[in-house]
Length: 163
Image (cartoon, rainbow, N blue to C red; front, side, top):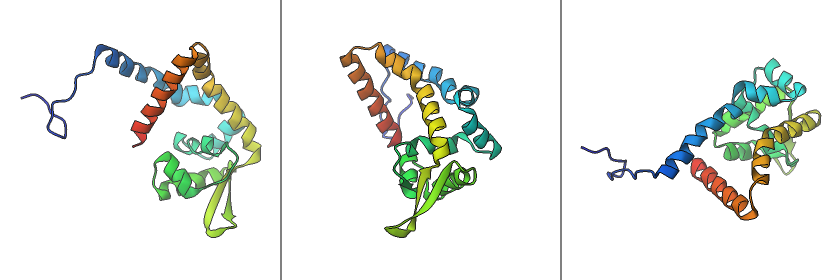
């Protein structure tokens, strides 16, 4: 009996081109994990993360704070697709390390706003720029229409993963 999906239909067979695209994804993983990430991280940020036992999950909060506008813990939870207690735990660890600052929202005293500590802004900006260099170089090699197609596809993929 052929394998079926949850709706009871036989799954769609991917085309050779689709298999090639999906096969590329695991090749990107090492760039987003472990030693590669630590090697790109500026020393002050790496030392604070390591000294306080912070993980990549903690690090995922930081780029969200680069825009400069403080975020509520619930907004961080929504952006990262984690529960409110998990977001609160991540922010707590980053706060204890001095990487983020927590303040009371003057408009709603029950709400906590989170911002990046100024001393970590430049190291984090440097880290994000260094991590983005390969992607930006790849985009530079594309025509404007190829770039638009790539960005549309990447955005659609992110949307699918997050929903």
